[in-house]
Length: 580
Image (cartoon, rainbow, N blue to C red; front, top):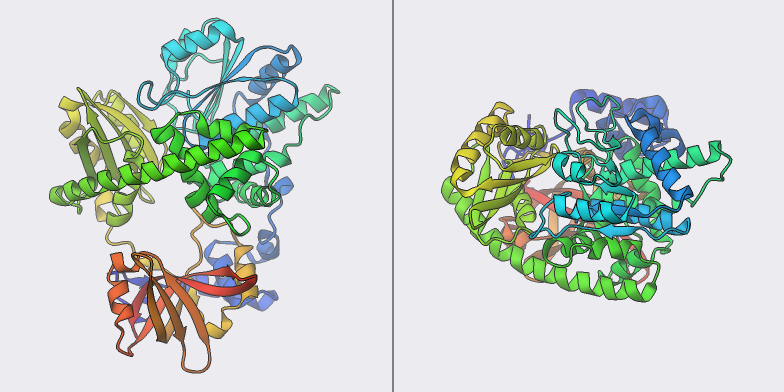
């Protein structure tokens, strides 16, 4: 049965409320604790058992951090890393060009610098070299370094790693592994096919952090002290975890929660400069990491110099950080302009081809490889289908894909590469990259559609709006929102709680900027609630709510705290509405 009777909202969605089992679990928590009913509903939806309710709201890293030695090759990797540090060897860090790669590299560069070692950073150019290690780069690095550490890449790089004959190679990665591993000294990856650690949700920075934890253990066991403060590095782990859309479950919750606390201290020059250039005016949250900081760090790898992000995150110089942050901010603006053009063309092509199958895809001549992933994400969001966007140049196309919940895109792409329809490809469940010969483009996409259809991708309709329950305006207090936030952080794998406010009247509505709408809502009994609907006029919400004619509506969305003029107030980030 539709929640509040909303079978089809203004955005065409059915509202789904909590199940009877979730309602009962929430009631049980509410009866046995002093927590607000809305918070109990959130905990029940997340499957938190009654005895663990209070502990869940205060996740402690010491309680949730797994033993790094659960991961295969971890002890070998940490021991070789520590030996290189003791012998003052030349160390190179080969990193992917995205936020996870840059943060992973920064973790190692900062840790080594505090140990008195300046490591070499190498980030491949997205266009000239593509993703991951390549033979010329690895061969050159091996000639000048005795240890190469590949972060956020390398698990499928058999030939490039074999070319690094004069150096030991350690891989710290999280991308899906193949049937065989490259001939590296150690491949630490929770998504190796022979791995059973149940830590596959970690991003690469999480894996790097665990190696540093194991390195610290080995140092202490050898009587060599404990090394740099690892807790101070958690801001980098948090940024990577959120920006790489890693599920905020298990130890990731604690890593991000503690990382946000560290970031709020404003100790890292690169993140301070980036926060300032992004005009962050409140304490950092997962929203800031995912939508303000992450895209700017990514901009270097997408359309600028590939190593800008890692350099920004690892620098100890405030002046260098300011210069790098300003450059990344400029590149991010340019990226948005390029993305807008590609997005419009891709959307038109996808709609012409059809968006009701198991796969939505588009390919275009000269589409910038740095934005195809973002455009794929937009296609996925608008169609609720796995999406692939490919930029064609010469005889090849380089593309990126994003998936929907329950559909493993990375495995399908990897199978396609194994069948010879792709030149190369890989990734993880929710995101993947590929290179395809132009002549194989249509057959490859047809085959990928078949593989995704077997996983049920074609069965997804317009995404239902799942709600945690109802609230009234007077119940939406700052204290309630702060307590709900303790059940977070929210993001991938842990959706932010959404509540419905039934039968409200619109006091006033005004357009803000090009497409946003600010509203004042009331229940007719003195309860009032401010709301903002971003992108309202890009959907049916803007016209209908702004020209309401006195009609009453059920509204739904996420609660947040708004900071203005030194005061705090509750605001609803309105996502949907339906006539009451």
